[in-house]
Amino acid sequence: MPKCTIDGREVEFKAGENLIEVARKVGIEIPYFCYHPGLSIVAQCRMCAVEIEKMPKLQTACSTPAGDGMVVKTRSERAKQNQKAIMEFLLINHPLDCPVCDKAGECDLQDFSYKYGDSYMRYMEERRTYVDLDMGPVIKKNMNRCIHCTRCIRFGTEVAGIHEMVAVKRGNNTEITTIDGRPLETDYAGNYADICPTGSLTLKDFRFKKRSWFLKKTATICEGCSRGCNMELQHEANMVYRSIPRTNMDVNQYWMCDEGRFNYRHLQDPSRVTKPTKSGSFVDWSAALSEARAVTQGKKTAVFVGTDLTQEEISMVIQFAQKSLPNSTVVHFGTPGVNSAADDAALDKILKRKSKTANLHGAEKLGLKGSNTATGYQAAVVFSGGRSNVAALMKDVKVPAVGVGVFTDETKGGFSVILPGAGFSEKDGTIVNFNGVEQKLKRAVLPPGQSKATSEILMMWSNQSGAQASATAGARV
Amino acid sequence: MLVKRKAPLLSGIYVTDIISGMAKTIYQFFFGRRVTVQYPEERRQYSDRFRGMHYIKATNGVENCTACMLCPTVCPAECIHIEAGERPDKEKYPIKFEIDVLRCCFCGMCEEACPKDAIKLSTIYEMSTEARKVYDKDYLLEQRGHK
Image 1: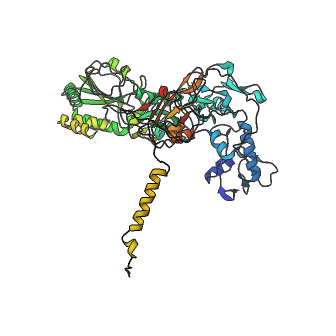
Image 2 (image 1 turned 180 degrees about the horizontal axis):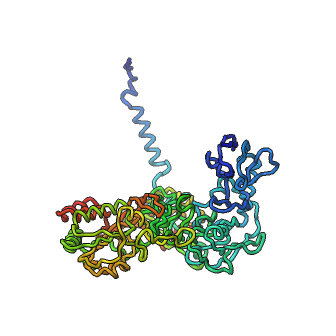
Image 3 (image 1 turned 90 degrees about the horizontal axis):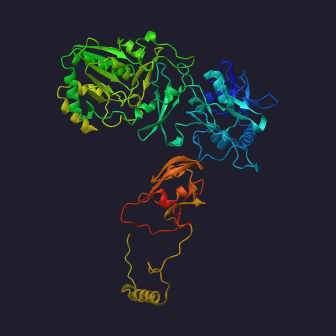
């Protein structure tokens, strides 16, 4: 392997890697704004310029591939002077509104100005200001904060496949905007906020909700479709505030769609059923469980397993059905029109898949078949994590039904009993994506109200002395 | 080894010490400077840097606070609770600004952290109440002890 020297340390690299990536391997940080590993390289912010021996001028590290025997100095006097000058230049027109800005705390410009910039400013003239147009429901734009890195423009053309962000005017008057000031159309608009190195593009949904440094972070998987994008739930005090994509080159690279990004909200729906419910009114767990037993006792039962359940939960349901519901058949359901793994296909050229539940391929792996009807059965049990389309299923299911899992006012119709369970942000488990990649869900928050994990519900249900089990479970909470 | 010394007679029975002590007390009592004040009638002058009751500074009737959350971040007692919002004349402002004074330890770090000169500690120290007091935004905006 070829070697180069960065700040006196020898680094091995693969041919074609640029200096930023090579330096990162040994923990040397080269500051940058316009570079993004998932986008093309333009080298226009000049922040990453480093000194390379035998080269007369500073070279931008993002656009310079490492060469064998190259000697790079990232903190030499000339490089430092350049970083300081570039920081001062970028901050000339940047407003000092970090207290107002949502990006504060995770802002590249803020971090690098502390590390590489100067606390002193020579610019005394009036700052350049813009008037902002509405950017649609996802993104809030504040052009005054922009440093013209053009990451958003490149993201639109190269990843989202839609040329909607453009730079109009030239020089000092450059303005980044959408064509004709139209709202954003792409389904991947949330990524604009992620890649923006300043607070110019921020999420409307997250606006002023919480400061970024208060949030706890849990690495988990999106349950929005069978892609299984890696993401990070950011939460505090049992409330999820936002989710951002994690990098996984095999699954979702750096990106995430808006549907998955805002999917956590359905679990915080105020109309979610969080208490055991018997024909519309709240009851305690033992009453709900005995009613559930009465509904299914000795009857031919169809057990519908939502494909948003984890592998562990599905196999538990299969075991439970064999033991406690002797006359039952276990089938899976999820998205109308996607009854088996063969029906699942890509919905667009980027990430989205047809199956709107994450674990369709896992359920098939466990030997379940898809079905949408309960004809020929006398009772039904529906397991759902809140993402499976229960409303569509219940149109066809006319028999007395027990619902286990996440239900809201919209989906609770048609059920005799509802036993509230946990959604994807409230449980640990494994899900299998369309490529067969097994990934782990991690619990970020606790199930709300009296909701319980599926395992606990099944245990209480199958236990003959159900009242006692629920009493001890209640005491433990 | 402990050596027991015999004390001189006069100091042994403390006569001189008692007399000199009494003289000092009598001098202080009749001619010395008083160290106490008659509190409700008389008040002591405190320094401007005294850390007493909080208030939020307002300029032209608009609160200086932009709900940047630096004071709840730095607060060691975690007694400040802020909720941010947006209104036409101000991009970000606190909808809710509450200080639980019983938990407050009057360290003044909130004042120090504030980038907008909004939260301040006045020199007011008479803050006793009959019930547990949580200062809300309206109360804090009354500019008590403005300086």
